[in-house]
Length: 171
Image 1 (tube, rainbow, N blue to C red):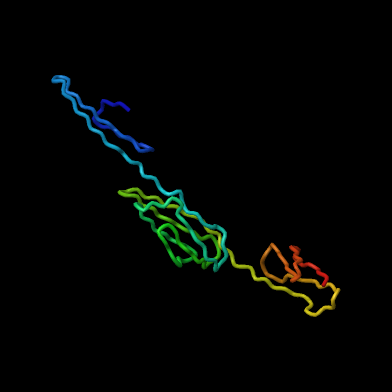
Image 2: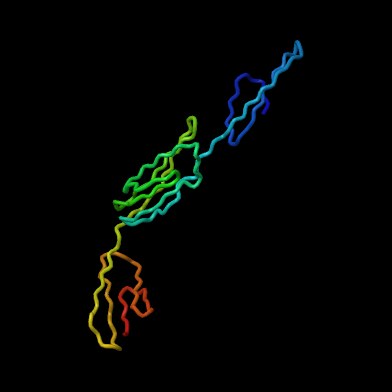
């Protein structure tokens, strides 16, 4: 841009070089100076699973890690088991809406916070009821007595499977 003002304010969105050209019209003298403004960018957030079960161990990653930035993690509903330069490993402790928060600081004063909401549920407990002794060629009814769960996958030991809640199977 061109300006004749002695006070200019700019807000670049990309790296930009600004040039100042001064002239003394009386004597024909001039001087030029320039400054390059570098626009630092933040990482794109946090990558990792949002739906977890209590007791799960999950990894969360900074996708655009920069070694010149500093990072600090805060976890609600779990705790950090291990951390690396661009990731953490979390074990989830409590059900409900939890979070992974990453605060990223760029030199000299830029700061941004990213939060990934986590939905933690209790782990389902599988409980089966059936007749334990049957004759060859007879049918057995398998009954799911689990207090939670809404997806079923039965394996009968011979390669056959079922996804019905309470299947009947002939042996």
